[in-house]
Image (tube, rainbow, N blue to C red; front, side, top):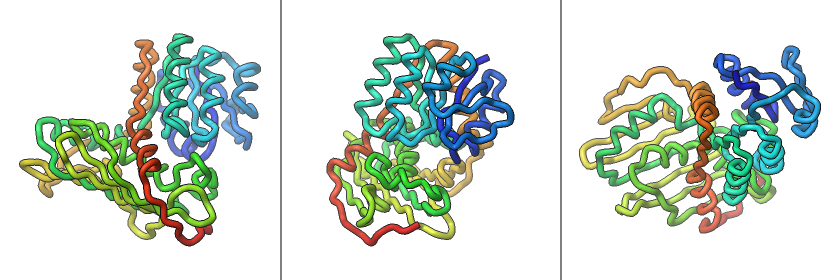
Length: 307
């Protein structure tokens, strides 16, 4: 039994983490830390992680669901207290801070897990297997959703370090770096930034591989109506498409049976295995692609975003 504490009890914690923990017999949620002090049915809730660690019940692990800007200090407190740490995506506000966390985890002999939930979408493993033996010539990402629907009131997304449209788009990049048989590199980006915030609301990213595959990402945080989370790959002998964020898979237009979508249960299954083996899993490739897009991206100021 892994006794786990949850830090940051917002929408993602309520929607995904708490049900996934409750559904896995290897975990027991024994404490939480949240300034909102939600009612978790008898589970003690503390104001911050420091108080939870000092005054709460004994913990083996901590899952961090705070915004990325606040992640570093919280993760350091848990690691230095000898707790295994599960990082909600994105794992940090910068690439270098995740390297620091990995070093601290090694120093204290605990597990660090940079979780990427979209990699556990039902169609992703079969997409990876199909592409593994093929030459990818072109790949297109279309990731367009309504920020007002999925992130209501989450002002941290628009602040420096919040990533804007890349907060959802990094899910696509996590799938991309999982299924591509070769490494991916950013070559260009165009970022549309509302005049009253710090992070982009839409944009495009151009990428490539050592083999010269053309990869594009079309990103939008203002799409109303049906939402679009698609990845299409053109290989030497067919076309593969992941839809609904990886939940559905087609090859040459024919649906492939992929089973039930179990993203967060899959994450906690992986975390339990890592803890049992004493192994960390730290992958910053999706975050690196975002950082590179910000480095080379041409910024265009657009009208203010008003929720």
